[in-house]
Image (cartoon, rainbow, N blue to C red; front, side, top):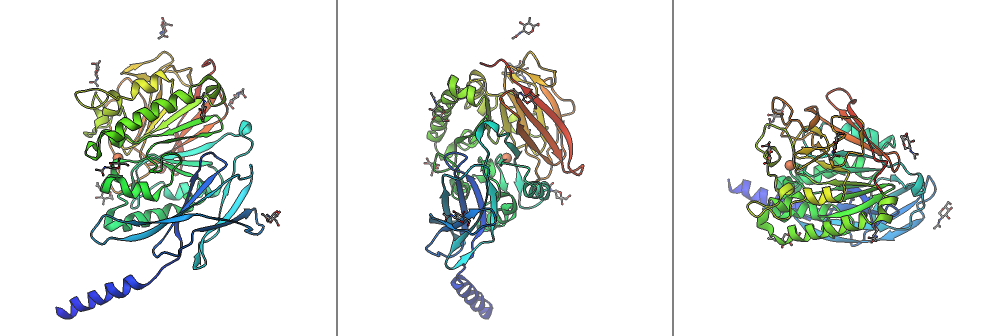
Length: 427
Ligand SMILES: *[C@@H]1O[C@H](CO)[C@@H](O)[C@H](O)[C@H]1NC(C)=O
Ligand SMILES: *[C@@H]1O[C@H](CO)[C@@H](O)[C@H](O)[C@H]1NC(C)=O
Ligand SMILES: *[C@@H]1O[C@H](CO)[C@@H](O)[C@H](O)[C@H]1NC(C)=O
Ligand SMILES: *[C@@H]1O[C@H](CO)[C@@H](O)[C@H](O)[C@H]1NC(C)=O
Ligand SMILES: *[C@@H]1O[C@H](CO)[C@@H](O)[C@H](O)[C@H]1NC(C)=O
Ligand SMILES: *[C@@H]1O[C@H](CO)[C@@H](O)[C@H](O)[C@H]1NC(C)=O
Ligand SMILES: *[C@@H]1O[C@H](CO)[C@@H](O)[C@H](O)[C@H]1NC(C)=O
Ligand SMILES: [Fe+2]
């Protein structure tokens, strides 16, 4: 017995002394615009340097940028520690393939690459979109990795709920998940929002592991891709009120201002499509007890009793085109809806000048909680639904035509739903 305790002590002591400077968990995101890329990675010891060496094409990696690292200690018992490095590359040339590696004199990563967009007017950005992808049972992972290497996507939107959970096993599941998405996230900007599974320790794993534009904690931000204005919000401030009501109010005010800027006539003409992502849906027809299956979803009508800071009216008033949610481990597309009323042009495909936001719930990329199920018959506002594992693709063809399709992993990548949104008389 004593021997065992002594040996365990010795093992821990020795183990914690093994320094590891090898970079891992490499992932990228847009910086202040699509001509900037922020590269983030982890090391378990502190190499005291955070360097990216990069170049265009197969030439030498003859450009160098330095950044900084911050120590991140998981909130669990083991105080699992890592150094999270981030470096921003600015003024990237358009329509180029950049090759890069990250690290320090003490260790370098593999080489990765990313593409920069062409001249904005001619760009047709294509994105893969999903939520609720775990470390275990990540059904869509292989297909997303392969699609990414074939150059199908300009960016990814991961609509909350990562790893299940990033803090599990003192953060080791978070590390394993970040390694597992590296074959996607080191090649295309991996843009995120928080879900309920990130709640532990006041969302610290999410805030530290991802480096999104704007707000330094990655909780709310927006970015432009060609004709798209994409907004990422956290729905969790409506549910974990224990972390403070102020964050909810801050976000509401930030969002109101962001929508005001995005809908300024000049901006809306240049970037007519406004797409919002957040984790918990306002509507869903699933059979579980989630908030979206009730009538008065917090994000829709506001916090209980007071009914203030509801978001549906804000989105409707600013003619937001698409609202993308996850949380339910299934796929559901709605007819254009506002306050339970569906709009002219409903029951009609393609959606032509729909007049209210179109909601999509896409949380079926796979996790250890498996599928969600639906109520027996779809309500009048539900246009299409499926419990297959899978993910969504979105392509902005131009300022009037936005295309979506839903990929099924259960059916070997078959497209099970596709739809166009056509807006030709907005302004
Ligand atoms: C890097 O190398 C390429 C190819 O040799 C060259 O065209 C480019 O000018 C170099 N860039 C810098 C910053 O030295
Ligand atoms: C949680 O984090 C937010 C910022 O992300 C901060 O404003 C708030 O005070 C924190 N709450 C607690 C209880 O630590
Ligand atoms: C137009 O959008 C940009 C950012 O995308 C913003 O900085 C600017 O303030 C907006 N213009 C107006 C008049 O709101
Ligand atoms: C939700 O409330 C509205 C307005 O009170 C009502 O018309 C509608 O039937 C309700 N829907 C559900 C699903 O309960
Ligand atoms: C919807 O269409 C009907 C019939 O064409 C028309 O009478 C009605 O005013 C329209 N409603 C809206 C909100 O556009
Ligand atoms: C998910 O599916 C797996 C494999 O069928 C099963 O072993 C596991 O118990 C399921 N988990 C839940 C939460 O239903
Ligand atoms: C926009 O794209 C759609 C789909 O490819 C096409 O039918 C339409 O003509 C395009 N519009 C313009 C103005 O290029
Ligand atoms: Fe969730």
